[in-house]
Length: 101
Image 1 (cartoon, helix red, strand yellow):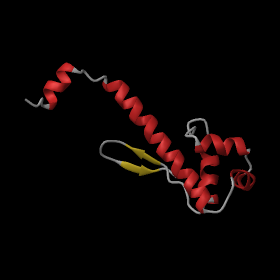
Image 2 (cartoon, one colour):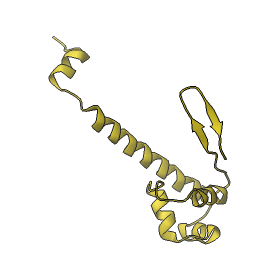
Image 3 (spheres, one colour):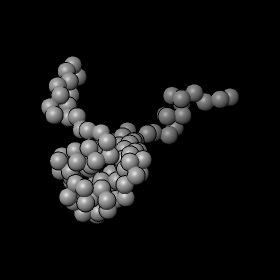
């Protein structure tokens, strides 16, 4: 007889913290990949983009590998503007969204 989800989970407990951490890593990889796509669609190399916004090529590489926490907001804004977009920052709570920049 087939096992339902509750029975399966009872036999195979899930560590929700590990699942959440893995999910966040995967989402960071997807965001980083999308940034690279935007740069490539704009016809820019990492070096060309770096020169446009006044940072090192290494910094662009770090951004495209998901290291956004250690990047300045101005650098990310410059990156996005250089590839034809912009940056919007929001303060978000359960019942409110306030655009900051």
